[in-house]
View (cartoon, rainbow, N blue to C red):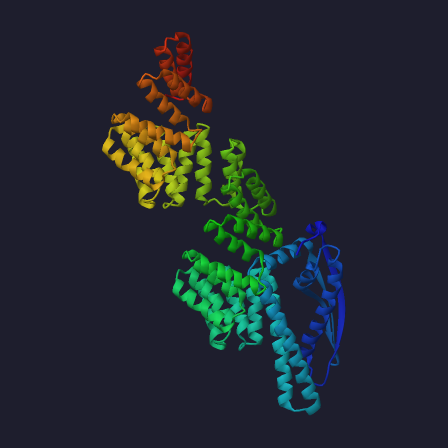
Length: 596
């Protein structure tokens, strides 16, 4: 449902009046319900015409249906009920409501279901009124007045649902309560109220409402589906699956139940089953942006990047203001190495949702990788401002501080990340690496060991711990850790580099050369590997190759003091004292500046 360019600002208001002529069966209460229903139809018709100017396609129809009426005046003279009211609609709010209806699973289906029930209730009311007017019997009068209550109940249900979709959850809870008061033996209001309670975080009250709905109507599929969501969030996957299965059995066309069951399959690694359920939901007409987004994520997890990209594109097409769709597609672009498209995607997500801490953090990561440290730091600062308990943002900002040489602030950020999430292995790795730079080997060793305990398959932690053992003379322990690191990730260049250092220290120069070659092959901009290989060549007397490697290390990192010092030694051995002297001067300058 694309929106017109001018639909982002302004408001429209429509005012109408309606008089309901009471019949023999009517009193003030029934007449008010009928008058209100008539006025609402007039107001929505008028608003629909105004919204046509602000929305493309058929979006204006949904917008008109989602606006709430406000009564200005009403009068009852025992013969007729006069009511005057208006609908005042903020265009940006209507846009947000429409996007929530487009992106969230099952919302439009549920809204259509509510309105279909309202239509049936109105038809039943008219039949009951005709029966009473024909018979004059008290039983028919009672049936008519119950039908009025039922229509009013469904009106409150619709109002609550629109309030909930607009983000006014507590108002929705009150509206659902009114619907229940008018029709206490009707299951849907309990289920909808449970959903609203769930949004406030009150799972206990939500579960109680779903139980009431099922108790009233054991065949009401949406209540099982909603209860399954509570069980899933509470970690009871078996009960969740039982409820989703029951909902699908009762209503094989309930798309939301397929969506929710797919999520359970996906988390358990059942990607084939998950995709089948997403396919079924989409076949049932539930082609929401979120359905494509979630299916795309499953494709991505399974390595099917082409289908993932196609689904993310479709999600963006269906939800052009759906920030999460841009984020997910941008992450795929980043994974595929297209940082330019990834950055554009994160930027668009931030434009749509400036309060997205995730988008700021992810874009900051791209800026950091590109060396744009000021921009990176600004994004990480914003992510932390928006979400002060965001460990990844502190970790990433710590990396920026470390890169600019502000080790104290970097350490503070790593400490904060660990405090917020003690199970975040990367934080321990980063803090350990910084402590190693500061010469605190014992504390660094402890951090690398903690990272390994959290994630026994974390190759970088084994590599870094092995490097510490190398520096402290524990060659046996170093050999064990580096061997594990290489086996866990054969493409991890630092592990090959350190394995080369170990082999050289053990006198296995040929094996050391293999590891250095492999490290450089895997990471052609790995300055330290060139420096280490240069030292190996220098030690064997191959000075030309040694000088070439030291030169490449300096080209990659112009602040690499050790590489200048080592090249100075090679030049001296080759008899070029002038170059040796110049390199040694540069080495001393850099190494002094770096506190070495």
